[in-house]
Length: 216
Image (cartoon, rainbow, N blue to C red; front, side, top):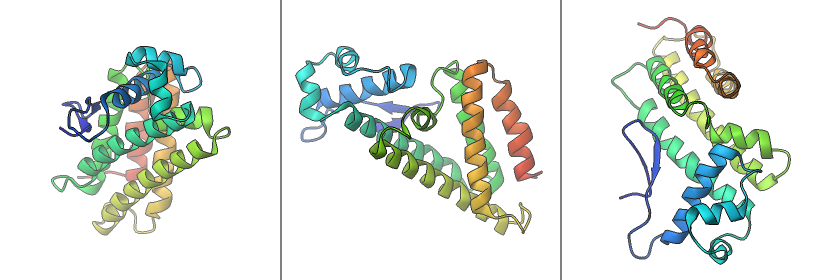
């Protein structure tokens, strides 16, 4: 089974590696534990000791696989970005829906996951951006790449919507993609403060709805 996959709710699931010659189980446990802790507590509050205790590995194992917590953070981000990419491709290439319907469905599912997690996780890209974009250049570069790739995928769906006459012909898909992604990240952060679904649902129906316009 692949290391990165999705569960029935379209959430990333990480399985211990069981195939000879692939990622060692100890390294995988460290990554999985760090992901959970950094989602819950944030990067800064997650120490190496807490990671190795959660992973149930010796402290020396950490430094066998990772030179620093920063390097581990990069791996966690890259893992999250790959799982996000899988979800985006699955949603954005769903030809059973119109392009704008694909975007609505994708963000509705994303909001459902955030609500189901009781607003304790949010988006790891947004979480790390707030904490580290000004303090770690290597992590900032990974964050920027992940965001740029997501915005590019949204832009391609918007271009398809424009070609299908679902959007105003004067709309710039790239600019609109940037606005959609940035405003959603802001709504996610606000929802973590309010701990209610009101902000996310309002974003879906009001902001995203007005940006995309009425669809069949």
